Image (tube, rainbow over all chains, first blue to last red; front, top):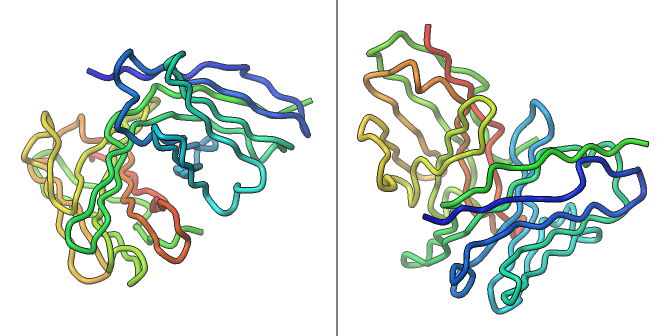
Length: 124
Length: 110
């Protein structure tokens, strides 16, 4: 059973950089994609981006200029950095494992394991 | 504003059947497989259905899903109190080159 756990500061000042980690159990990183998803209080889910264990990344175009996702296989953790934050970045941030495949020309892309989430508030 | 349209709410009495729709376009539902997530109150989302109509291990067969053209739907039959949750459809979108979620449907048990 893959158990993911997010960690990081719960409060970040406007214009600063939000930094979160997600611990991934030993021997679980290789061969998989990993994502971050966020959810503003009382609102819906927003995909932030993914990283493949090889280091390839892809980001939500609306956040691309501010976000970096990285993976440390030696430390078994996934990281998220979001710079120049504003109040609009206040949200619960989730890490998740992604399964990717193709069925004919159709892409299979789904998040099968999720962390419990961590609330980050942007405020001075 | 999501590119996937879901009704904001749905409801039913215990034992009834509820259906949630998810409408998209040729760049998302029309081209790729649809997934559904269940989010119980104050908890993380959980994968409920994947690849249009597949249930992960442990999901009751009361849950079913289908896709036709640029629309998809999730059905819950034999509604139970523990089904009260938010349900999100999600799919890869070629135009946005990213993964998109619907705005979510809140299911209430009357």
